[in-house]
Image 1 (cartoon, one colour):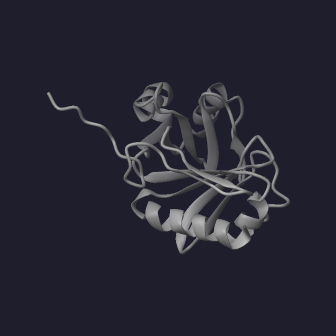
Image 2 (tube, helix red, strand yellow):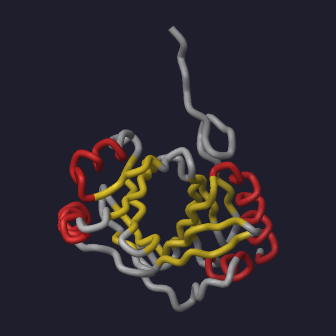
Length: 187
């Protein structure tokens, strides 16, 4: 039998972490992701189920940073849901069962690369990357932005020195290069 192992978005067997004096950039390969969209006429049912799952329904520019399930708003009646991949690798299938005909669910785990930035230099690095108002963002604030010509989501974490960046997995190397370059330029 074959001993198959998945590769991270950057192509390694283990997630990559780059440490600088002022910021750490860690590839996060531990998320299961699924997009969720309320079906026409079933919005109330979808919202009720989402509230049961996350505790509240994230509105525009907001995320619910729950444990184990978290989610953020991506568009009108649309959200991205995340959970630990180790315990909920089949997140999309689980959500399809929970939401039934009230929502359309699409597997997203293989479509996105995730990087967690932490450290006291987080704001300086972020300002070099994109036009989000990082110094004014609060825990749970979410922005869709462009980083190095890539459409990305930026989520302010529960801790003041944590930012999560989700970008297209097919361009993970390009996104990582942009993050590293910004970190070097602010060192």
